[in-house]
Image (tube, rainbow over all chains, first blue to last red):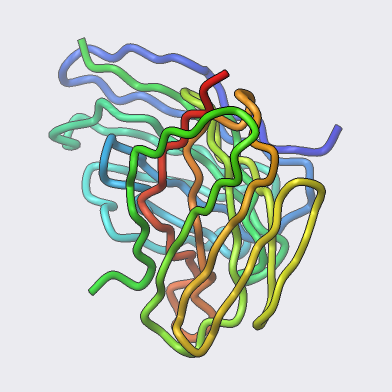
Length: 112
Length: 113
């Protein structure tokens, strides 16, 4: 089945730790995105990538980092510099620029 | 003003009712629009993808675009309890280099059996 796989589904992080969220797609999509979703705030763009080895900051990139070494993979690292990391993180992909986006099932990150 | 705005609701209807979900957008250059359904603690699922004005129907769902008033709507006929979810409207940003999508904040819908 084609789709986007995010793992883990739930993640707990201690204060001061970096954690990495995985996102893999087998849709052969060029573009991939990371969004953060908080109650009442909708989706906010963290980073996006149009091609391998290239990525751009979104609206709330501070405290996050990404890599795009392979077309199918776009991991997100939440660093200790992110002041309020508890949120629902969504990865998405699209075939080329600005066609419809498809989402993974999300990772719920909680700082303990 | 946000590029895409959506009434957050919540909206509560009895089973079998016709549901109307609405968004407005600010940029008249937008040509594509999408509706997503998101169940609690799940990722958004693409429901409808429309281009230009007019209606698009898929089963019980109809997406409507009115470009003159910059208004997009999703109608759900014969609503079911399984339709209870948050519905997001979206428009792709095709005119800037940001390569991203503009999303509404979502409307929470509950269909009561």
